[in-house]
Length: 84
Length: 423
View 1: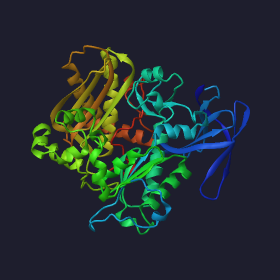
View 2: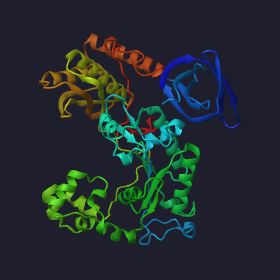
View 3: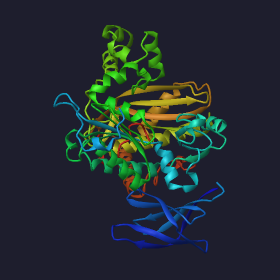
View 4: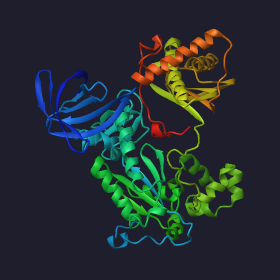
């Protein structure tokens, strides 16, 4: 099942040495999800705002997270559940 | 033909013939949209999937290799694809993902040659003639490109190499997925001799049928056919067809930023449902006009010819155009001209697809108006453009679009990276 949302979320991020940032956990609806793998990363732009998208999995479900490089906010934009 | 022998990799290939012989590479991403979705979503890996505009309507944009044995292919209506492959998973296209991935592929390619021509979102040509010694031979370049794409993007591609773009493209089709095919000039004659004409890029079923009527089934036959016969039947492309049959193609690899200026700007959309209501049709035409107008104004272009495309529910498609005396790029003017075309038609069936195009383009060419209301309208449009540049497309738009605004991004066949686009 696929769910579209636009919830602001809290995210834990590790910043690496080579301009790379990797989300490691996020909290959505009071539950903390540990990110097992970043499966894909891509960039887009809304007007002048750079958007960084991360497809991540907690081992069971797939989530699409978006980091707005202008507002510095993280959003959860999509959830794919295993029963797909 | 296909060479994977390690001992030959370090040697620059003996292209053989003159100093002017070029070495052209064609890279084709394997089932691009589907592979990107499978890379992004582990649940889709190994499954038959089809990427499409919407799950209810539209056509398949890309079928994964797992879906192809069922007969699912690009261009097929999604309902038909579902019928022939019940286990098919439909994935709605996420254009931003493909555009960004494509730009990363192009960036990898530019690390090997400055002469990279973006042919479409998932295909590119490279002229590597001057880079062979630098990278120890053509196959070494191809192998390194494939390695980087696999490592950095988790995707595969097929690469063809030949003395020109035509042969390189043919070569990349010969082994898929994840193939590498090299056709040297001295092998060309033997390969083309029995190759069906349909395998030539640009020769579709219809043209192949016309050729068959003339007794031409293979490239070898096409390459030896009298030019007079081909010209009589096909007009000016007769000569070109004969050259294609001989594997001749002198077209250059046109690097990014050096492309000729665009001749038209257009958008089309398949609607979520067939519509007959004139007010609804008008709103979609306004949306398309705004998309076209925005692109024209960003490129400081304007055009004189407006074309409206309509597709009925039975897939019958037709276009009608109107040419004006002056150049326009305001969305409202494009819209009014498109409506004038629509008014001249009698709609026989509900409409499933609409398209608006402006052609006859010129740069920095706009008629100044004497009338204050025109100048005011142009000022308002400039402010709207500035707001949309800052906050994103359709952030500020016509209120009549708010009810059914769908800003579906589409990939056109002539897609190019936007920052490099040359008008």
